[in-house]
Image (tube, rainbow, N blue to C red):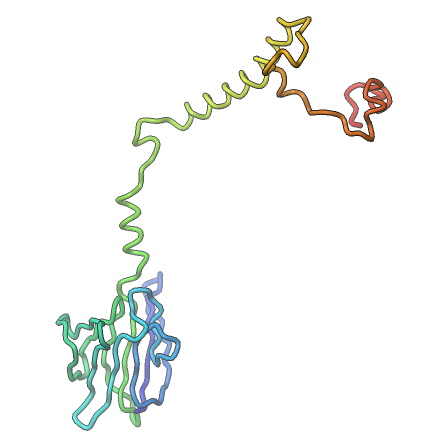
Length: 207
């Protein structure tokens, strides 16, 4: 069977893009499998969804086991089709068109029910915003900023000011100014730990 398969795509400008392909095969298999003559890349299409046959009595379409096809809006397991008939395979419409001279069959393939439409509709129904819950992002942002300033700046200053003669560290479980402590000095620099001017030769100058 010699066939012409034309893939249609709607353009944003309103036109239609046409990509024709000429095939020669015993049958035209529709599906998501890589060996399908008419490859339909959509998860709603089965790997092997339908088959188009050219027989002495005409052109016939047949659904694979477990798959569903519709011809002119009617669900059928198999049926003879003619020019103008539309076969729905998942989200695709496959229209039988007049074949060029020397060809047995010609079809137009178009994705008419994109997956993104379903996804966007679901997303639109599922969106939950902070404003919708009565929570302002600005209030939370300012609250978090003030909490950080209070915890890591104001609290250590107050603690350091009120404890001029602190108890030994072993007697205090946690000091509020502990967040300013960068940790113990490395072994290589420990011998100059009490001589700050060795590294810091001038104030406010990076070492």
